[in-house]
Amino acid sequence: MFLMLRPFPSAAPVRRLRLYEEIAARVAAYILDHGIAVGGRLPAEGEIARSLGVSRPAVREAIVALETAGIVIARSGGGLFVLRRPRRGAPLPWARRGDPGPGPREQLRARRLIEPEIAAEAARVATPAQIDELDAQARAIAAAANAGLPFAEEAVEWHIALAEAAGVAPLADFLPRLLDSAHHAMWRTIRAKSETDEQCSARTGFRERLVAALRSRDAEAARRHMQEHLDAAAAATFGSSEEAATA
Image 1 (cartoon, one colour):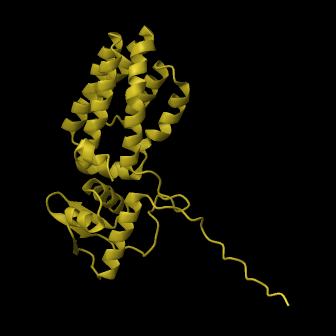
Image 2: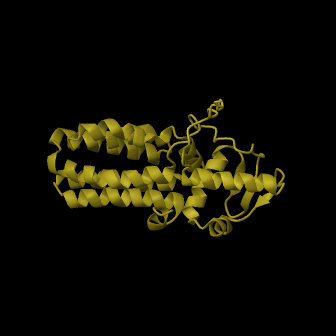
């Protein structure tokens, strides 16, 4: 006599959670398990980090995710508060098939691995016409930043043009996906909370310095300027660049 086995129930594929996603889920569960009402105060960032055994930048990234989802609000110097009670186990609103995608820290780590070498190669092989075009774009971005105008899309185009000037077409095709921060929900939250006109202007100045390195064919200086730019972006968003690169 043969027993008919019931088929294994179908469900979403098993997926390892991203670190910021897991921390965000833990904080959401804490809100529900402790019955914290809307307007209630949550533990401080440092306390959450110590309790979970992770870095403060990792917690900061998770808090950005929860802010973007409209669940919490972080007041500068004033603590973390519940804005809306979460649904247990619910994915982040921008997730596709349950996956919210790489977070800002992961994007920055990838950029720090790739873009300094793109800059160095551009210093070696870019044509004078390509350098002139990068210079013109850099000046336009700096003017927009100084006038308080948005320039995120123009900045993405500048980085793509730099990759093209380096003669690495596959990376030029890949960069738009890596540099989609203008359309990434969490980056919009970060910019709205932490990026001042002064910070924008300070960071846009690196492009003109990098163009000068391209003109002088100084690959090491070009690499350094790009690395410093990405380190500054990481530090401004998550703390020191070294701490932001760790879990």
